[in-house]
Length: 163
Image 1 (cartoon, rainbow, N blue to C red):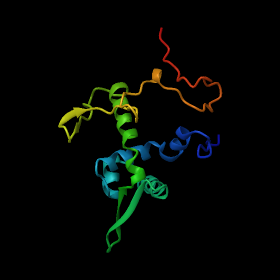
Image 2 (cartoon, helix red, strand yellow):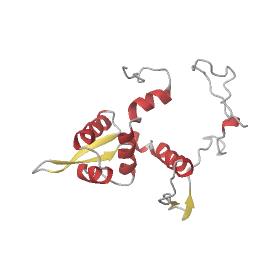
Image 3 (cartoon, one colour):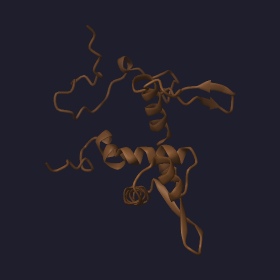
């Protein structure tokens, strides 16, 4: 079966998935946000095969999510730093962490605790309205235009089924 190419879809979620949707890519980004920069450190932390890591790092560089910088001349060695485009993925990674802590945590390890250094309080990611600051909830949102077949023409997001 031929994999579907999401890059040309008229959907920003599909195009984002095409860009960063691979499991190794997401974990590389997580580590980059934790400050990992060097190939051997990514490989050691993730346990990923070198050829796969090389491929994913190059794709992230090609997509301008990471920047490759030489830090040693002999032998040539490089590190990978998040670009502005890459930095903007932080809310995605944090929201995935929050979801995983709630729904995919085996209980064998405690979840990562995030502390907001400005105020010193433990926090969790919350998606808020850019205009009023209120937390965004599905019931309060309308999406326009709707391009999903079978989507709600009013733009109202689907509600969870309850039994």
